[in-house]
Length: 95
Image 1 (tube, helix red, strand yellow):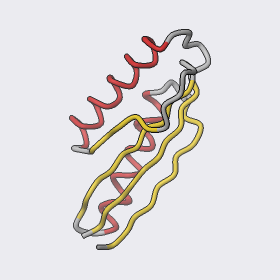
Image 2: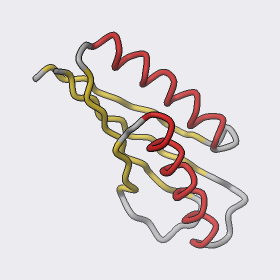
Image 3: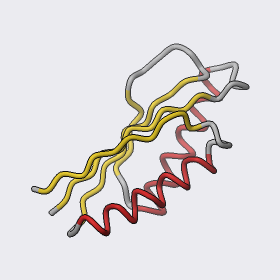
């Protein structure tokens, strides 16, 4: 069994309110859950409406599957955020 954890930071320069940020986070979270069956949470809370970080996790039977899903998630997040993803870090651990 392989457990993967992803941490992705976003900077959306045109957001002016926490309400705008929250709407985008909810949209991204629901699509990740629906399309990929992932666990998703906003982590590292900040009062700046332009910045947010998502923590994402998945479990797979082999590392190749995990890597394929992670690459799809990276592409999805990049496009979904309007190319405003600042970082995308991940780790795959064998249990």
